Amino acid sequence: MSDVLDVVVIGGGLVGGLTALLLAQGGVQATVLDAAPILDEQKVLSVANPRVLALSQATIHLLKTVNVWENLARQMPYSGMQVWNKNGYGEINFGQSSQNTPSAEHTLGSMVEPSVLNLAIQQKMLQQLQDYRTQVKVIRVEQGVGVWHIHLADGTALKTKLVIGADGANSFVREQAFIDLDILDYKQAGLTCAIRTAQPHQHVARQIFLETGPLAFLPMASLKPEQDGYWQSIVWTLPDDYAEQYAALDDTAFTALLTRESHHMLGEVLEATPRAQFPLKARAAQQYVKAGLALIGDAAHVIHPLAGQGVNIGCLDAAILCDALLHDKKRGVWAHEQTLLRYEHHRKGQNDAMMHSMSAIGWMETTQLFPVVWARNFGLKQVEQHAALKDAFMSQANGLQVLKDTCYAV
Ligand SMILES: Cc1cc2nc3c(=O)[nH]c(=O)nc-3n(C[C@H](O)[C@H](O)[C@H](O)COP(=O)(O)OP(=O)(O)OC[C@H]3O[C@@H](n4cnc5c(N)ncnc54)[C@H](O)[C@@H]3O)c2cc1C
Image (cartoon, rainbow, N blue to C red; front, top):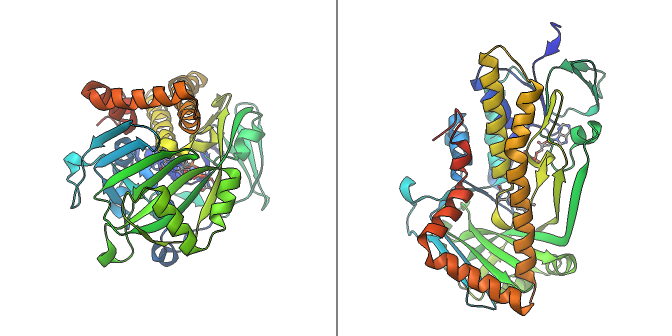
């Protein structure tokens, strides 16, 4: 069995990369296979991404654990959140606005461009991992007796005791393992771009629920120091046909539309970068594990971007799986079926619940049925008026509770 690898991670994005780095820190060297090339640092840092990831406190803590956080070239902490209905009275506020960079005590999370984060993860993997391969094409993954065989397009064949599928929403590993997928097509798209507003964001993430769907203004780091505090990334959830139409507008018409639809919440929208569109579909793998195989991140679940939790729940998958594997390793056990099932048991229920609640909120917020309009206004008001309810919301969103019984507890 000497040529059998302990673990191969297929997909070296944020979730796969974090997993490999957590394992390396625990003394297990994973082989990482990624289809993407090494990023060009200068290119990544010279342009603003159209979108940002709202990273939770738990994700930030995990990135600090593997020494990636301090190597991020830029990020924008936020200390407040404001959510309200356009056609109602419901409004909810968390935290507080902040003129200057909020202190650690007041920071709710941070907005990071995906490419800036991927760059920092890649650089750390290049330093820490002995076998990190990029631009790799995996052509077959098949189960053998007690091992998985991985075949690459260049003719290489690998054998491993554990495959971790972290290869994103269209996971090839999931398909090769014959794991079925439930899909809910929202018939919506996320329209995103970076914008500059006349008024500063004051480190508040804002979301307004319009008839067509939620529009979020998320503070982001600026490429020009003199414009710091005025740039945000928008995520505008729209029915497919609206997204097409809005994406095709010229910059002047688009910024005018955005100023109007956002109710001038930060004054005039002065500038917008090219827009990107993401089709929105919820996906849930029916199983997260098989003997010797585990799915994590978007390979296991894709949720509506409404609450900015997609990658955060993926990072919690990584933490729970690594904690269980490293715990077993100390006892001389590796990738036992029961351990993998425990990981599935721990994560699948929570992730499915998150996915269903995002779908329900998405529906509630786009319907104009009177009882639903009333319920959502009433719901927002109730939460706004009860500190305990707000605390419960925040504790769910920051993810720290999930890490409580692991070696990554804060
Ligand atoms: C509009 C929008 C806004 C969002 N906003 C947020 C937010 O604010 N906060 C948040 O937490 N989440 C957000 N998300 C979700 C977030 O982007 C995803 O959950 C996250 O990127 C998933 O990370 P991952 O590592 O699982 O997958 P990916 O980032 O997709 O990485 C997969 C990796 O696998 C590699 N790969 C793919 N196929 C293969 C293969 N066959 N062989 C080898 N390698 C392969 C790819 O090269 C890539 O490196 C948003 C999503 C959308 C669409």
